[in-house]
Length: 232
Image 1 (tube, rainbow, N blue to C red):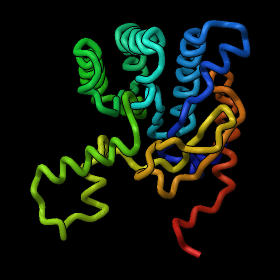
Image 2 (image 1 turned 180 degrees about the horizontal axis):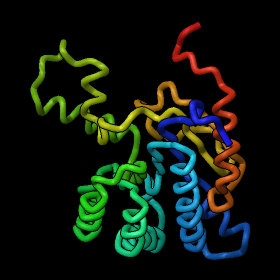
Image 3 (image 1 turned 60 degrees about the vertical axis):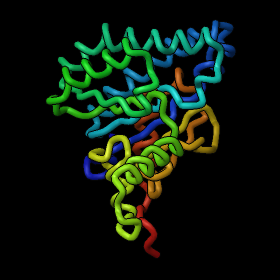
């Protein structure tokens, strides 16, 4: 177990490899997403048990709309099912749900379920699950700049703090640690603003195979690192 003082406050995960997991096991690609959700649930509770205060997980990117209509529909239905059938359990476990992204582009039904779920859990204090849906890092920065432009602020008063204030979830701390699974060694536009000084860990595990033990390995590696934030 990682010493409490070395536990990152905010861990963000790129949950990659669901479809490859399905192909590897001779299953339909949609089954990979279903099993991937079960892996997320286990890792999420494990993270909170270990003292992580915020766990962000990239569930659906702005680029994922390019996938087949069948796969997109399945992912949307899976999110709806989670918000209808699982949210009560998360709430009983004192977990607060936050959903981040261009939510206005989702279906009205899904938007309502998201709003209801966030409202139900808004006062929970064990920790925050920040589920990122229809999210892209550049898209988030574009939206922040648009919000600043609409406010007609003096350009000379625009600084990093102001841009941070106009991101989707400005109240959340920047991630201390970003984990990506499936052996890919890139961030693919994930939290580029907030992740400026995040520690990066890449796992060869496909996401459905990623377990709380693998999460502990990542925490242990994080604890060994010396974070200097640009200092020599």
